Length: 302
Image 1: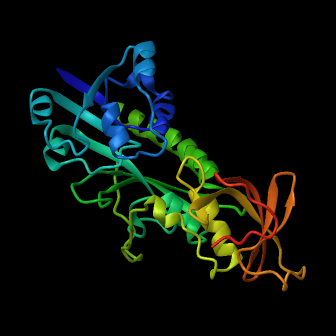
Image 2: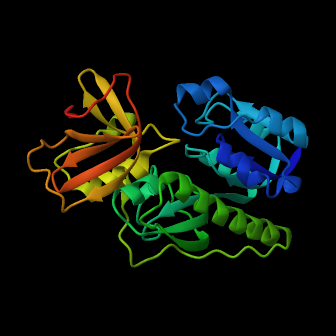
């Protein structure tokens, strides 16, 4: 069997992307549902209904690394692959099977090769950057090192959360992947090198425990952590006894009002299910949170 355009993906964002060009897709490669659960994939998507409705062939693998799928790839032919919402490197033996190559995306606050690695959108918010470069590039075996097809800059404003940034990223991805598909059809794909004047750096993998808030940090750093890890990710948290208090939504509230009589980490007031939290350089308004214990004024979070 020869497949012209193949999409690799496991997330709901993968489905949202391919809705744009579903008539061009010959095959979707995803992973079994139990593999998604075992790998704790944030924002995982269910492909069964989409595939049934749109009559698209699907190959569901039991190995997220794709290292045990040689028979399928060796016994079929492939022209171009698109990877979106696939959080693993694609092995060289699979890349070699695609005549035009496999293309994927990666975000970077300064442009590749800066910010390779894991969770670049989250890290861009957490580290206080005000911009993101979307990058669409041809895969090689090593992470985020291929030749570029396109790069597009968009902003991170002070109201953005990881949810809104993912929306912006998807908007740009739809546009650029459609351009790539048109160039593929016209045999006119042109590539260029990554930036030579930017240092190569790597973002590390994030885990749920990385959402622990350090109350020694400034309010803006805590705000950036909260908005960079909120839904659909595990969130940022403080501790109250043996329970976690997950802060889903919070904003800087004030730096001038006098709360000097309160401790850092203290809930200084409650308003209609929202609370004011004392920090080292001001107070934070927590608008949405989760805790299995009842919180009240005067409670100290650590």
